[in-house]
Figure 1 (cartoon, rainbow, N blue to C red):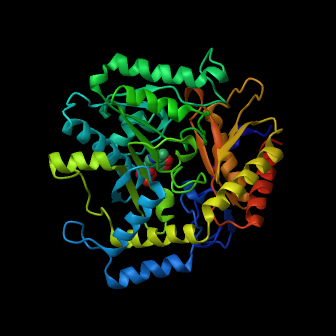
Figure 2: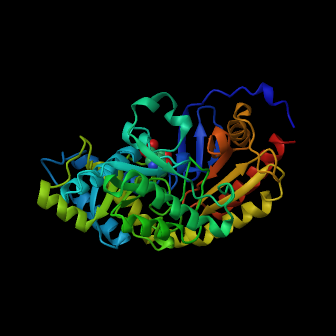
Figure 3: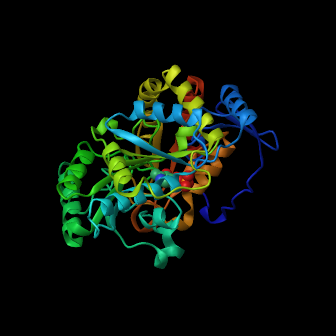
Length: 438
Ligand SMILES: Cc1ncc(COP(=O)(O)O)c(C=O)c1O
């Protein structure tokens, strides 16, 4: 192994331009964008169709402020999302980022419980090794010690249950027992807090940065929903990273056969062309809020930003017209298998896991014991830098394992990435790993 004591991160270059899956920096270095930044750029960069849609809207007006105006892109996008979601998920509030979307999920849940007379239901339950955003409410429900650290004393009181990770099972629990164990644990936590005090349970269908991509065990989401329903606890699905097609279906919980009460989407919604996120919730919740309070009592200056909606509408239309979700499913299976074939035997690759175009590689010091590297070694950051030197940008993640250790990278290509790009992603990861650990 190399001398890991001498790692000095290189300065971040200025970005120059991007086309499709390729980005060029100020020095003319051209790299493949293999993770869409943090799983955002679902149609790659510089798509003229989206740029034109944005310009057309800007030439009319950038934003019609929500209290004064509705807009055509807003209505069209709402209709499109309702159609994609189904299952009674008809109510939508657009904001700009994932954290705002999650804050709004929490507020929808709180307002609904109050409105139906469940006034004691103010507590949230979340999971360890989860990330839901950086604003204080969203950070409060994030089981991510590295990001909570400094702010711990000012956060909401939230309970955390175990992550659903088949690679890292709770002590004494076998793979077969995992779902039952986790459902029992959630039930015990609700009873401990008093069911009359619990507002909602929040989870990512496929954990992103806080777990290095962790798909749930079969039957997990259904089991958790059953516990929630038994005790009148709302289920919030945070699909900021895994939703809007990233995992091959528009709703990330679709393959698990679960429709949540409330959900968030963000990154792949507008594909990063303009910032846009959405909180989507059940019609029955919307009806109660309307009847009791005249509607949802939250909102921001840039809620339903018109140009943002126009950008996202075009992104979603292209995904639909080009059948890209089906493509993500079939090519995603190929990508996962290729990653496993190429990297599975590497002594420092602990696990390769994912769904659709959302894959994570967890690195370990010892494959047999799954012992992570100590955080001080900054393995994820080193791998990110080595990959960049090999002409590939991936999203390094850390601090998701035991006791804040844990290193990995996330692969999240554009839904329309060419086959050659996907092949190069796999090849360049193999090269970089061999270089780093040679
Ligand atoms: C699952 C999840 N929720 C919420 C957020 C917060 O989104 P944002 O960074 O846009 O505020 C993120 C960001 O990575 C995320 O992955």
